[in-house]
Amino acid sequence: MESRQLKRSLGLGMVIVVAVANIIGSGVYKKVSVMATELHSSGWILICWVLGGIISLFGALSNAEVAGLLADTGGEYVYYQRIYNRFFAFIFGWSIFAVIETAAISSLAYVFAQSVGSMIHLPDLFPSLENFSVGGIFFPFVGFNIKVLGIFMILLFTWINSRGINTGVDLSAITLVLIFIGISIIVIFGLSSSRSNLSQVFNMKSYGTTPVTLSAVFSAMMAAFWAYQGWAAVGYIGGEVKNAKRNIPLGLITGVFIIIAIYLLVNVAYMSVLSVPQLEAIGGSPNSIAAVEAVRQFWGSHGVIFISALIAITTLSAMHVTILSACRMYYAMAKEGMFFSSAARLNNAQVPGVSLWFQGIWASILVLSGTFDQLTDRIIFAVFIYYGATAIGVFVLRRKMPDAYRPYKVWGYPFVPAIVVIFSAALFFNTIITQTKQASIGLVLMLSGVPLYFYFRKKHNRLKDDILQ
Image (cartoon, rainbow, N blue to C red; front, side, top):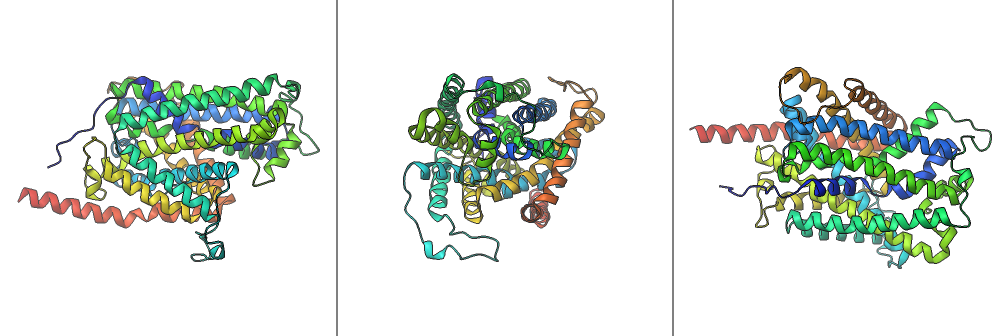
């Protein structure tokens, strides 16, 4: 019988590290140019970063109340069993495995490999097979050299995380220090550069004749929201956090505030050296990144190597911490007989090693299935269903457990969780309308869990009957 237990070894500082590292990814470098093409105004770009941060903070506040009340390994999977039922909880857990977190790992590994490819030449692999497709949807050999490097990094960091959670979190802390140093350099040198023009940063006027519309603001906020995505993963490691009912809510809120400050500072630096028309031109080029072009303005071509290395480190850090945290959910499901039974085993380092490898192999397959944009479109479609569901959970638990002790109660109740619910629903439907193909793929992956739910439930009930006999 499995006797090992998860070890509660992470304090508040490490919870903040996991929260920040899980949020900072490619969005801080790439999304400002996408927002410029929607808004045509630097002032409105900053407003949308603030609004995206506020919505993310509201989501974190709502999540914090639920986490403080129900904190345990598995995050929302555990919460949804208490809020809704086992079926909804299982579909969420399966969605995390099938598309949300594994596609996040895949997309981050892909961007990391792209960054490496911008610094050194990666030899072409099987170029004659680039037109090969699976059903005319997936083209596994397009950019195969990038994909192979991405897969290698996923498997490498899966192995690193199998050596123990403290090893994994310590590595996150080290990479976060490097990221903060790199972003600080961009901010300091960008704002102090002779090319810096702060007056163009806070200009609310729209360049050209296109006015700023509500639809444009909404689309720009979607771009910002991708950059803020990831804070909820802190709940997955609840069983390994000391004083989890205090440290998880506090770590979530602190981490989101840190991210908002970082994003505002670095985007002010970008827009002080790049005009909105320049950012729009960057957004129209699939091979250009706003951060790279901004650094090029004050450091020339040598700066491109620096920023490419920084992007590589950042995406590697986010990929690593996602690998570390997400596998705990499959472990929690397997412990209840609702996932493959081997995923419930802890290895000698007291981490769910089998669960890690299930996740790593599937994430590697997803790398082959598409590009960065395709992967993130599938994530966006799925994730807002559950952000909204957690916010609804605040209302449900207030009714179901009115007298339960809550270490933290969401500020601004009932308005704050209600805003999260409305915003999540709007983003969900907008993705269906604007990204129908990728939304359909994401939906198929999510609903593939329905027959598996009944399979695991039947198997679990059969085992219980055998024990009782």
